[in-house]
Image (cartoon, rainbow, N blue to C red):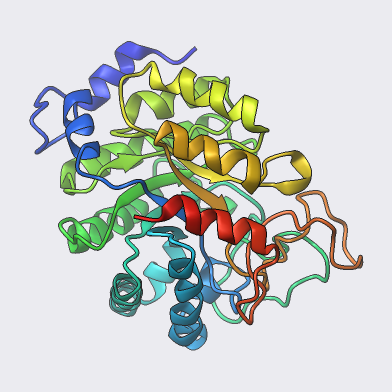
Length: 345
């Protein structure tokens, strides 16, 4: 099991917000100044993965602006957006310029993003340059991990990854357009085991050296594991993923609230799995828990299809993820009407 003594060692002793993890009291004080945050996991419909979103040749601010307008139209005030270490490594200044442009576009729509550094999910061998075309009907056929499998040689690759994390954090550490930093998406979701846990620990250590003004988190996603214990114990704000029904969701929230820190759900909504807008969004509203459903606009990621889709099939009924068609038409107007009603401020 994860050692809580180890967590205490990693956190450090300052406890004043200038270094190390925020105290529970600091996190609660931050939360007291936040609105109810509602958003989605966002990638423009024109991008198949993080690299296609961020590389100069495929950077698409017009689509980003249009689609964040869809998010604003239903009351969303945040989006969760994935970065990628290779996009930074190959064009550091250009990558940061484009990230600043994203923040400007989002700010125009009254949206403050939550930004994600690393990811253990889907394709193991990302490469810069033109990205593959989507495989018809296959969920996330082109999504890529960060870092790649070939760049998980600890400790020799830590230096490059530390430079990535600290450069981005130092550049944007006091940028009020950013809501939160998510250091690592679903660590150990590709059987990396101890390698992922070590990168989690290092990611927090690197972030604590910079200590941005925005909170740091890493989402618990299994509901019961040594890795989840690690993520919860290191985060300023406890975040989690839940694709269960409303009863499971409410129980999950109550269990996480026992840690005495603000709670945020950074992934939810999978219609055919029972995670539904009409049942689960009211739970988040009633509990005052920030929430980010998966997906905004149906596009090249093909996330309207379920996780285990094998390809070639017609448009599924119901859609698995996503809320809008590319022209801005809601998949289900009852869903978007509920978002708008509950987010009325």
